[in-house]
Amino acid sequence: MDRRQLLRRLDKAWVAFNESFAGLSDVQLMEPGVTGAWSVRDILAHVTTWEEEALTHLPLILEGGTPPRYSVRYGGIDAFNARTTDQKRSLSLSEVRAQLAATHGRLVDFIQSAPEHQLIGETRFRHRLRLDTYSHYPLHAEAIRQWRHRISANEFHLTFSLVAASTG
Ligand code: NI
Image 1 (tube, protein in one colour):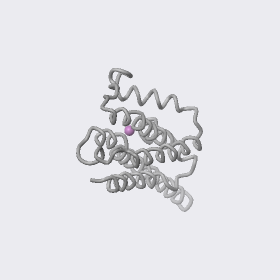
Image 2 (cartoon, rainbow, N blue to C red):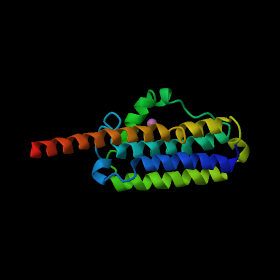
Image 3 (cartoon, rainbow, N blue to C red):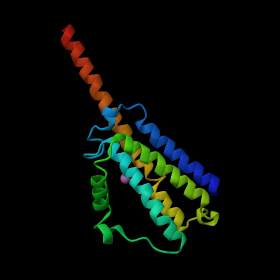
Image 4 (cartoon, rainbow, N blue to C red):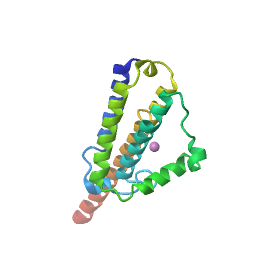
């Protein structure tokens, strides 16, 4: 896989992720319970967090360094996720959306400028990039799609019972 193919793979996963929440209203984006207590807004902030982590740690990997372990620094990935979710609690929906777009732009720029030999084959660079980005987005896109099915099924049943009540 060369740089162009890698960017295409990243973009494909990114577009699918963005499609998973396209068309939801601002109120729906803020609704808790999509994944655990998280709203779609919280998921967007979380996906941005992991792109920020990639942007922090990939340069270190390029220099031959090893990023710190989450278990050592934060007491595990879940603890890290809980902590960053908490830190981003005060951001407005529009701030979260702006950061999502801006951080992804920075990530694409970074991949554009990374040495191509790091992008080809199973390098530590590719491994870390994949985990933090294009294999991460689909997990959350799928959770959002499933949640949308649940809420639209609920709306259908609610409408149906209202109609039944008014005609019955
Ligand atoms: Ni995640």
